[in-house]
Length: 384
Image (tube, rainbow, N blue to C red; front, side, top):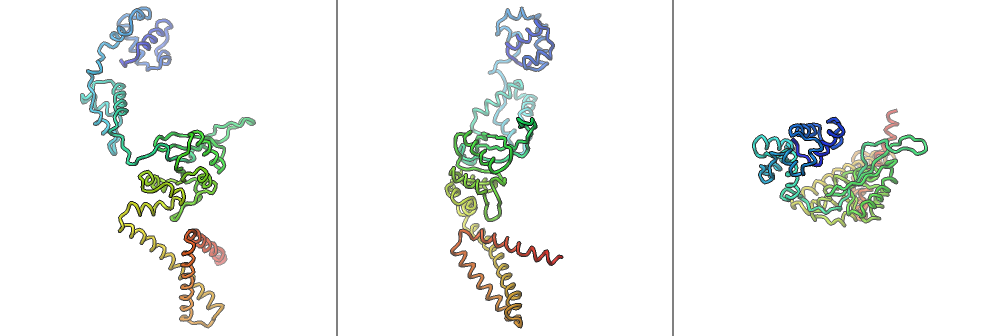
């Protein structure tokens, strides 16, 4: 019979012999299984107990009557908990504590009950620090992970109409402890996003160094291979609270480098997450690998630059010079003009990049967008 307290045994006997309750009703009342209640009542029949006679015994006597073969804790056989824990946490293992108990019991490694086995394993886990390992020295509360929850719930009732309204859930968790904050919002708009941040900070009673939002539009407008563009209002909110906002994926790399001391969080707060990969290369990679990495970046830039220069020179030579300036020009003259235009545009681009390094990426993206937009209408006209 499963071990329960003597107080519950007395309550089971009282409900049966004073109120003649059924086994199901008694089990629901005392909060144990029907089989446990049946075993207690069977023991009472064996010892000819009723409620009046059971009150004449103290708790120690009743314990010896109902559990005569229960072993003293020091006499129990318990397994090697380190081996049990290794089997549960082994890579690719699908074993759980229930499976390990059955294995230990049938192999003679333990004679304890299932509940006692679970209890002793939990106690060993709480007192043992040998298997608690973190590859990164994390600081509690340093990172705040933020996102909208995908599923919505119709759980807010309109007080005027009585109709249910859909709630969108904003949720945050603190790093290391996973301490959550959840707020139901009417919409997934920017105002609700920012207001939920303020309420979360009041709930936590402090501000984390880094905010790690998912790629929701209320946090990240766009991301590409060059940079991550944060929502303007969200970026200003981060500056107000003096925190680093680092979206996920790239944020995971950044936070790992910050926690390992490879990058100063102040650099990320000032420059943004685009500085992560260069710092990763400069601080963790060998010189040869850094050279190959930046050679690849430069080659990719050159492959785009030479095609753009050739396109600009060819368009000017064939569509402007030969059509409007010198209609009788031969191929050699057109080639000379094309080369000259390519050299002039290349020199202007070099000077522009030399004195405007902070905005060259934005200018490049604007140029790509303008080129694509400029070809749209001629393409449509050519089709129809």
